[in-house]
Each structure stands twice: as C-alpha cells, then as structure tokens.
Image (cartoon, rainbow, N blue to C red; front, side):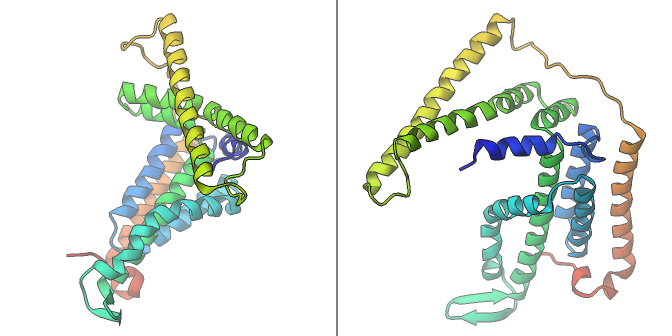
Length: 276
C-alpha cells in the first residue's frame, strides 16, 4: 500500500532542478511518447537497446536516483511480465524445449524477449517523465496538446485531490494501528480481518463521494459550468528544448540507418523478430 511519504517524495523528486526538469512539459511529453512509439513498432532488439541507453543518459542528466527508478521499474514490470512469460509457450514455431505437455518454441522465445525489451523501455520512459514532471504539469501539457476539455478537467481535479485522499487513508490506518489492528496478525480470525479491510475501502468510497459533493458545490458557487475553460499559462519553446527533441529524432534516424546498412552483420540484435 502506498504511503503518504512515498507519494510526497515522488512529487518532490519531480520538482527538482536539472536540465531535464527545466524543459517545457510538452517537449518532455512528446519526446517520451516518440521513444515509446518508436520502440513499440520496432521488430529488432537493437532499437530497444539503443533507446534504453538513451533513456539512461536522460536519467543521468535529470539526476534521478537510479536505485529508486529500478525499484519502481521492478514493481511495474510485474503486470506486463505476466503476459510475457506465457509467450514462449503459446506461440507456434520450432520446439526448442519440451517437458510433458509444455513446449517452448523459438518464435515464442524471441517474441517474449522483444516484448520484454519494449516493456522495459516504455516503463523507463514513464518513470523518467513522472520523476521530472509534476502531475499538474503533465495535465497542463496534455491540455496544451489539445486534449479534450472534459478529460483534462477530470484529470486536473484528480491530481489536485490525490494526495489529500492518500493523507486520509493514512489517517485511517493510523487510527486502526492505534487500536492494535494488524492485517497480518494471526491472533484474530482471518474473516474478521478481511471484513475490517472491507470497512476501510467502504469508508474511503463514502469520503470520496462526500468530498466530490463538496468540491462540486464549491465550483458551482464560483460560477463553474460545462463551458468553463482551464487556465493555461502561455509558454514558448527555448533553444535547449529544440536541441533536446532534435537530438532524439537524430538518434532515431541514426538507428534506422544503421539497421538498414548493417542489420545483417549485427547477429541476433539485428534480426527481424515478428509473428507472421
């Protein structure tokens, strides 16, 4: 369960001062989306390898702690890793290992490795973006990039009150702890402990609903309507931001040129891995 201190440390990390932190939000958003899309559409391992190296360089320039990033990556990769694990067993191809009814094919293994490389690059890009851009900046950047107004408003409100709900959850947990409640304790029946967790979840739903009502009434009293617009401060791109985005584009072009000329000499990482 997320602690308030962890959430605040992430927000503090995103508010630091570095070359990457000081870039305009739209530039960072576009740049990382380009890297993710370029990696996802590739069918050769050379692309995610180069993109991951590029992201590590960006991480170094942003002064993002490597240990913290690896910890977050290890947590996030579990969700996609579950799908990747089954790929060697379900894809058709030449069987390279078998045990009873289990079979691993060469196509499935190669495809699983490529998917894992894509996932690592994508998650690394998201981690760097969240570590160098406060959530409000990301929402504002999406709005400047013509995100639908209603969705931008929902995201903006969600981000504004996210930490407040985490704080409220921490207060409930402290109250439970002060009364010697421990979900892992073997001194109380398991069903009773599950019931208490259910009460906590229900309480958070009720508090969320009540807070939503208060926020809505407060917005109405200040003249909010479906025609209201979010305020977006004007900002212009600077020279270093153009250099940043152009550098990433140049790296992508260089990767394509290298693959076009030398893919046959690069061995496994230059091999075209795709499922027909």
